[in-house]
Amino acid sequence: MTPTIPAKDIDLRYLIDNFGIQLVLDDHFFSEWQENLPEITDLDKQLLDKVKAGYFNLLNYPPLLEDVVRMAVIDPILFIGDFYLNPFYVKSEESVDIAVSDEDAIIKGRIDTLVFKDQLWVMIIESKKASFSIESGLAQILAYMLGSPTSEQPCFGMIATGSEFIFVKLVKTSPPRYALSKGFLMRNPGNELYDVMRILKGLIQIASVSNCRLL
Image (tube, rainbow, N blue to C red; front, side, top):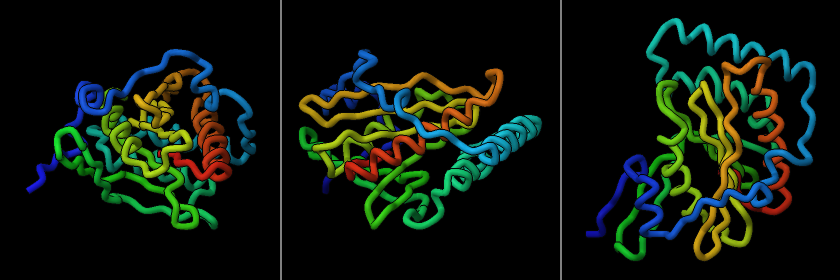
């Protein structure tokens, strides 16, 4: 029987040893999170302000677990961004298998939130509870991205802990390479959810045009 490895147990060392994945620090490699981003409306900003206020209210009633982060932060962001409307539709806990050829093993996991367009994956968001760091979800989402059947186009992803958001780009070259955006923090002055929304909409546009995935 082929052994299975839970995706949540994967770490970066495993991905380096088995897939040769490499971190790229050149800003030009992942420019999409900064360039040619769409604007958002005043109504979008008002609703995102409510999301931020709701998050801080929930912090007064710990623990802020993964399901609550998804319900109180991720789901409203998808609603405000019109990702529940045609031509998109949303599924949660979608299963995915990734083959590890060198070990004859299968990585198994369940995607927290998956947005489809025309039966194609468009976006995956990996949610973690507020007490977790972004690093705790990085290897897991990279494993999902490595399992994408599309190799010609880059893949994009977002990890969200409620308190922080970070975007990931993966190019499935040989070896595969990835890069990260800066982190967007709830506790920073203003509302950095505005930036998160603009980046999401921008990457969705790229994914829709090029048939690549936003994971």
